[in-house]
Image (cartoon, rainbow, N blue to C red; front, side, top):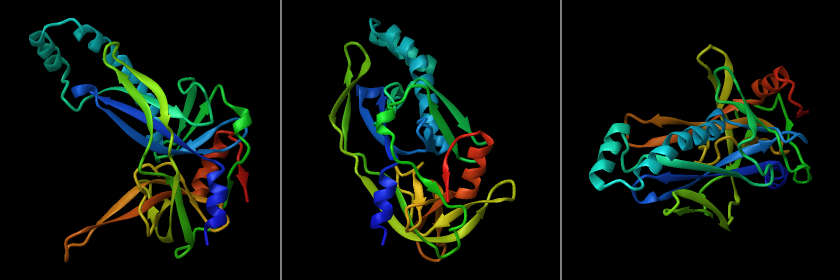
Amino acid sequence: MFKKAIEVGSSYTRPLLTGKVKYKDREILNLISTLIILNKDGDVLTSGQVADLFLISKDTNEVFNPIIKEMKDLKKKDIKKLEKKYGIKDNTIIKLHNIIVQITPNVNNLVIIKHPYLDLAVIRFKSINKDQLNNFPIFNPEDKAIGTSICNLGFAFPNYDAFSYDKENEKIIITNKIMNFPLFPLNGIVTRNIIDPNGLITMFETSIPCLPGQNGGPVLNIKGEIIGLLIGNNKIVDQESPGIMNLGNAINSNVIIDFLENHNISYNKK
């Protein structure tokens, strides 16, 4: 039922690859998130927490680069003193790097526009690969009734090898050795409307979870039109029997449309 919708949706979704380096043994953690290309200017729609990865990357590297450099020629006891001074643990993330596929060669030259309180953001890159931007989503402001058939679309279960770590020079190396990140669709229905902290119905719940990595991805109707943006899960605990059910959370398209129009960001609407 969603074959055509997935084909349409895949034309405007892109992965964000994130490499995090842990302090202990300089272990690299590979993460993946989902971005939606809005227009020929390369404006990208995603969740606020995904957009924050660019800010976190800058802050993390600025804080820890001089600390790691200071440690380089110290004795073990002096390193321990610095670890205590800065609160560095084995699992502390000391470096972070992002890669975006087919959108921009420069992930640091950007402007982030965030919704005042919802988990919603647009990223505007100042240099883009225009020849890679050909297909853009259509937002449907109406098709969100409870029981509507939907497909959550995004990237999940990262299976790539894009980063290595140069311990001698203490820096992340971009290898792009294995770039394997197929889209992962899940189909279900809209289950409930969700009221936000301001008492407004700005979100809806889905019968299927938002998988790790799908955050920032689209919720599609059977035509491949966007009716929502995935931002995470509701954890439902059954008190009579053990177990937790994860139900997806999405910001509805009406809110997204208002947000884009308020910031004069071009998009396609049904």
